[in-house]
Image 1: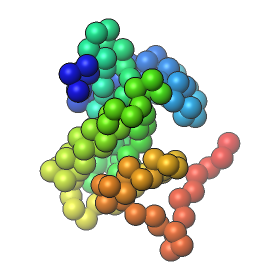
Image 2 (image 1 turned 180 degrees about the vertical axis):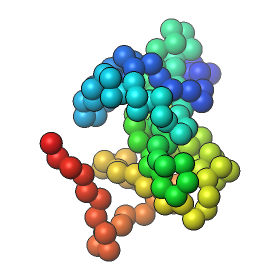
Image 3 (image 1 turned 60 degrees about the horizontal axis):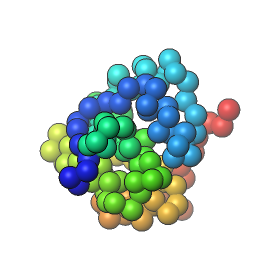
Image 4 (image 1 turned 45 degrees about the vertical axis):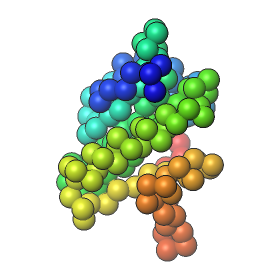
Length: 137
């Protein structure tokens, strides 16, 4: 991890949008991203040591009491396979275990094969009892 700087911080809007695009995540609006990032409950970023380029991120969002969601887990394709997503999840989970009520609901939407990473941290599929859904617009 010596080639990286890991911080508890939110990314700048432009670099957040660029990393989402580079990682194949769905697009987000600039103004909406500015608001959303500033309302993060907890956020981890990873930068390259040599040039401070954002190459990894992950956030916790929610109501601050009973419901939380892990979102924006992303590692630049050129840096994948170096354990960075796992490190992001470790930091997010440390915050969850230390700061969030154990009865709070914590969820995420997993793309495959990333679901294997999340299973390492205790996340389980909800189907068939329930299904994750989103409003497609």
